[in-house]
Image (tube, rainbow, N blue to C red; front, top):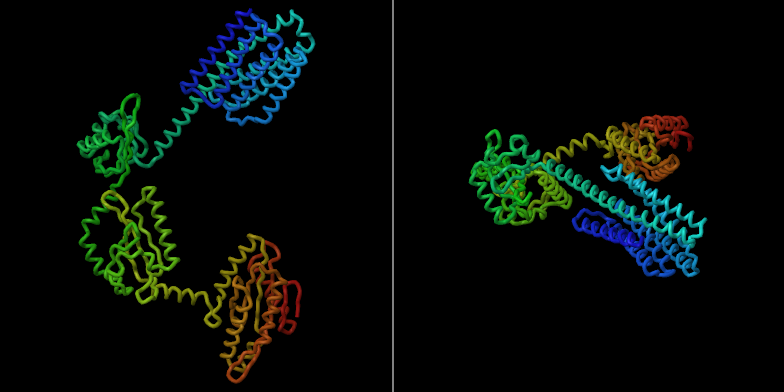
Length: 640
C-alpha cells in the first residue's frame, strides 16, 4: 500500500506541474496560485504517509498529515473566492483556522489522536460545504452543467468526511483494524478529489478566458462600427481589404460585400494610385502617420478629401494597416472658395459699414477694418495686436469664453465650421460703451488646423435702446415707475408657482386710496398724480427687494410678498400706514396726507391660484371699505 501512496504523491505533483504550465501559458485567473498550492499540499500529504509507512514517524505524524489536508481544503476555498471575484473574509477565516490549530496542538500534546481525526474530518466537511455552495451559486458562462457537477463533488466530499468524523467518534481509531481500513480509504478519496480539482480548475479558467475573449471581441466590434470616421483594415503589401466599418460604408458609398475581399486599387479608392505608394512608404518608415491629407474617390466617382491617420500592426504574421479617414471635403471647398474670393473680401472689408475682423489663436486682433475707427474711434494700429478682452466688460469676457468652449466641443465631433451670433458691449476710445452684434466663425489653415476666428461687428446701440424703451413702455407704469398691471401679473404668477412648488407662504395685498378723489377735487389732478407717485416711492422703501409692487389701475395698487404669511403681511401694511400718516405731501402752498384701505390674502392650500388670492384680498378690501376706510383687513379677520 505504501507504493500506492508514493504513486499518489507523484501524480499530484505532476498535476501541480500541469497547473503551473497552464498558468505560464496565460490561461489563468485570480485564485490560480491558491489552487495549485492546495494540490501541492496533497502531494506532500501522500508523501508524508509513504514515509510514515516506511520509517514510522511517530505521534507527530497524525498532527502533520491533518494540518496538510485541512490547509489544502482551505486554500481551495480561498482560490474559489478569488476566481469568482469575491472578497475573502480574512478575519473570520483566520479565527477559524487558528482555532483549529490551537485545538489540534492541544490534542497532540494530550495524545488524544482519535479526537484530532474527528476535528480534522469536521473541519474538512465544513470547508467543503461552503466551497460547494460558492461554486453552485456563481455562474460561469457556457459550463453551467459542469459547474453544478463540480459543486456536487464538494458536497459529496463534505458528506464523506462528516461520515468519517462520526465513525471516529463512535469507534476507537486506535484499533489497528479500523486504522488499516480507514486510512487507505481516505487517501483514495483525497487522490480522486485532487484529480477532480485539477480538471475543474483548468476547465473553469479556460472558460473564463474564452468568455473574456468574447467580451473583448464584442467591445472591439462595437467601437469599430460606432466611430463616425471611415475605418478599414488592409494588408500592407497589396492593399487587400480585410474589414471596414459603418463609417467607411457611409463615406465611400461601397457596401461591405463590395469592399471586403478586394484591394483598394480594385475599387479605385485612391484618386491617384501613386499617392498610396507614397502613403505606404511613409508608413513603412515610421510605423504610423497622423492627419495627413489625401484625395480619395467615392463609388459615385466624386472626389473625397480626407484626413488620414494610420498605424501598422501584425495580424497572423502579416503586416496590416489600420486606417482612419476623416472627411474634410466640405471644409476644403470652403477654404478654396475663400481663397478665390479674397479680392472681393478685401474690397468688402474696406468699404463695409460693419466692422470686419480676425483674431489668432492667442485671441489677439490680427486685422480690423476701417469701419471700427468710424464706430469706436480707434485707428487700426491702436487695435491690432491687442487682446480682445481689453475691449469687453467682465460679463462680455465670460460670454466670449463660453462661446469659444462651445466651439471646441463642436469641433471634437467634427462640426468645425459653425457660425455663432451673440450680443455684448464694447468699449470706445472716448470711454463710452456701445452695444454690438457679433457674428463669428472659426478659421482653419490648409492643413485643417484652427488658426483663429473671423467675423463681423454691427452697431446695435440704437436698436437696443429702442427695444429697452418699448419694453419699459410695455411693463412699467409711466406715472409711478413701477410694474403695470400686465407685468405685475406675469411676475406674480412666477412667484406663485415657486411658492406652490416649494410649499412656501405667499401673501398679496390690494391697496386702494380712500381720499384720492378729495385730493383731486381740492388740489387738482396734478396733486393726485403726485400722491400716487409718492405712495409708490414710500412703499418701495419699506418692502424688500424680493417683494413686488404694481399699479393695478387708477388708485388701486397690488403688493406681492413671497415667503410671507398673513400676520407678517399685516405688519408690513401697519408699517406703511404709519409712514404715510407721518409723511404729509407738500404741493404748492398746501399739504395733505394719504389715507388708504387694504385687503390681505395668503395662500391657504396648495391648489390656490393667483386669481383665488386676488378675489379673497379684494373681498377683504371691500370689508375694510365698509368699515369706513383707513383699515387693514385680512381674508380671515378685520383689524383696524
